[in-house]
Image (cartoon, rainbow, N blue to C red; front, side, top):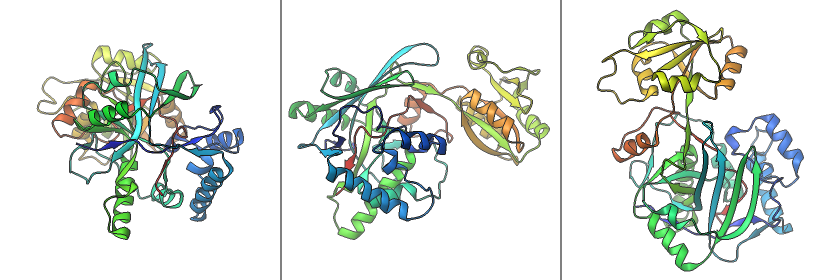
Length: 395
């Protein structure tokens, strides 16, 4: 099972973290970056998402900036290895109050297909080397991957608070981080995570970058005993009462709308058009149906035909792949109904979209235990972890 270890963390010296932490790099628009950069000259995006977005010099500038912050005392290095408890308290989209509690540490980087650290969905290809270039220049892990431990009992080990490092509330979500250095507790957390696999919930690409960086360091040093053998990860227990999993909807281009409907009608009864509202997602659950959204913004229920998907796992994304793989449809992905409707309104190349239902935590665990993979973009875990609470040095 994978190693999970404490490390001496880089942290902001100030306890007031409101203006310096940020959402993960891959959800930030240019306007988001404008606001965050203006918020504070030491906001983490100045290093994590250096601009301009093109040009190799940006990475060296990010590395120089990080080292400058350390020299100036903006960032300080812990005197000893630690784990960091990270708690998120929030109300989910269904109105249920939840608290996620996990731990930030260094997770082993294992070879693809070796087990122990498992993908839960197929990954779309990315040609960009952005995260790898940033890692080389900064010699640091900036943004954690999110891992789900299949080991029972991790949550109970994290109930007791650690030393408070900071707490912020953003968009209705309370984020609290606490340092743990007690040797017995550190050992217990590390040992428990090592008793079972860790499933990657978010950050498949980041983990792939960590693997590439590890291999570069192995080739350069001839050693398998460097900091590159592990990467920054947030790990919490795979339990349904903590996790909030939302859907990522499907957007189709390069196919005529009528041809798309004809392909879908092989497996679904197609309903009559109706308005898509804030209640549509809940109604999909009640009807056990998907929802086709056309360019007018009207929705049609897609109700599975009896027997149409026998022998296929009950995953909306998998059903759509089954029906459309042989078609000309080009699929992309969009989270959020409002965001999807805005996208449709602004992009005339879209033929239609399909709203799908969230995957259950039980199905996520079953998929992991059976060594299977879901289609790309099957799950959207919320809330998103913030970047900047902890940086893991690699030098």
